[in-house]
Image (cartoon, rainbow, N blue to C red; front, side, top):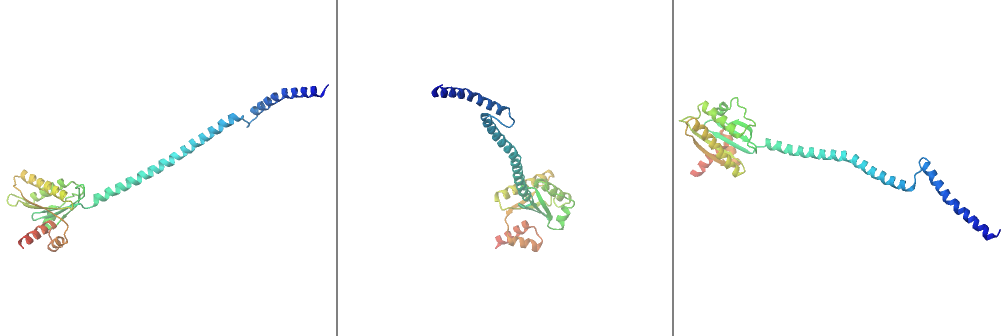
Length: 232
């Protein structure tokens, strides 16, 4: 047999064997545990990466929710604290002077923080009263009612001085007008023609010292100071 013919037959035999060998190898790889064909492996890697991202997101969400809750709680705490402080801080001081002297302190919402008697007659008016946290109109009703009951307001004694101190002039004016109207309505219901003198005033060390020195309300001290200055 010639050399060329021998080489031709060998080439033919090898060509016929290679596809079968490759198919057998791939088939064996598919059957063996832990061995996966390349295309399937590629898809699985993409799936695994996606699943890891989803898992990380799921793991992160509770942490994020916890942080958000903490922030909301902090904000609510700050707002609540500020509101609580506003409720405790004195915004307006209202003085009632007949002979009894009564001083009322209110917050920004016109709720009563504190009510004090300026003199002994004032203590009698406020006896057994708990006006803390009530609205100013409720307090006015109670105080005027007690003055009527104890004879400090009547047909013969119908004068009352209402003084309002607040750095906001427009609010002081509003309170002055509302309180004066409430008192007038209460006295009118008792057929008493009220004589109400009202005023607004600001912080003044001279007035504060004068009130302390003579045991007066700051409102009454302010009126006296104005009268004295007008005479000068």
